[in-house]
Length: 367
Ligand SMILES: Nc1nc2c(ncn2[C@@H]2O[C@H](COP(=O)(O)OP(=O)(O)OP(=O)(O)O)[C@@H](O)[C@H]2O)c(=O)[nH]1
Ligand SMILES: [K+]
Ligand SMILES: [Mg+2]
Image 1 (tube, rainbow, N blue to C red):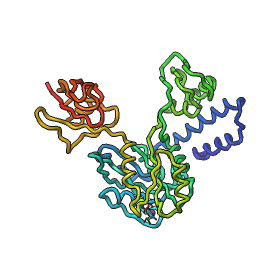
Image 2: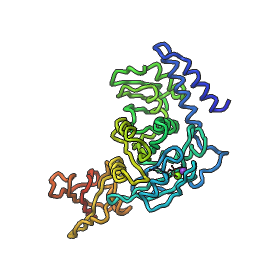
Image 3: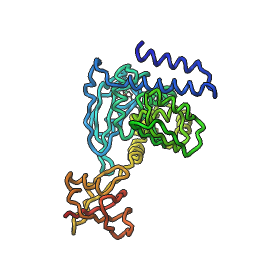
């Protein structure tokens, strides 16, 4: 039996098994097996065609990937908001490879990747879907692009495909500490009450993965699926925006109800009419949460034309790396002006571990 068949068989069994207290343990085992086979499926296919043109080098300060079914307008968007022209066509699968463009916004250079449309079951290898969803793993933000004139199920279906390759959208990792050891057996501790699973199920999951020695500390009421995520350790937690395109093609009533259903992470646009594109850029910027830092040489004005863009959580050390690779090793101290200075508007003298904030000005002093 091939892996796909095994997956189908397990799914079949799960659907036939009633969900109740008595079957919880058995279902947990099935889920663990299912996750194991899915992981196997995603291992690089040695026989299959190479992902030609898919290995686009990351560039700029962050990467945003466009994921959607064929002809939702991904290439149209790229061509509108970047200087890159990606071929647009009224037929499906116009784009067959990854096309990078650069979004220049607030002094940041954001790489926007146009990708081929995916089809249902993309993650199982249909179309070039597997390559596409694999590229999505490298994104700092994923855009789920949806055609307003088509099925309302698109978002759900895209989420399913991404989930199948281990991408969890807009979620944070479960609060579980999992440490493998070479001996000593299994210890399981929990700081909260477990209502969605129990110790026996957890032990059986560990057994499925042939883990016989480990420490588990559960600090959140996790589900079986979440616990499996922790054990596999291959999940990626990526923020996502939903972009509904072609709003020029639907009635005001439809538009209104879509706006109601959307969450704070939904943007409605029309590439054709150029509607909502500014909002989209702002939403991408907010979602990336980049921190802009200006550098200043002693006695000079800060260089406002060329900020360094960093991820949230960046420190003075990250700033040093952004200027020059070896700068941190000659570092003596830094002066910061701005929100992260506790004497703001006066500067603060800080070390390498100081957290910088958006719009800080930094001067580095070396030995
Ligand atoms: N009415 C309308 N049509 C649009 C809009 N944006 C794109 N289109 C049209 O939709 C069709 C598909 O656009 P593409 O940009 O090629 O779509 P894609 O998602 O890149 O498609 P694939 O590469 O095939 O997956 C083209 O005919 C576009 O002109 C829009 O906002 N409104
Ligand atoms: K198309
Ligand atoms: Mg395209």
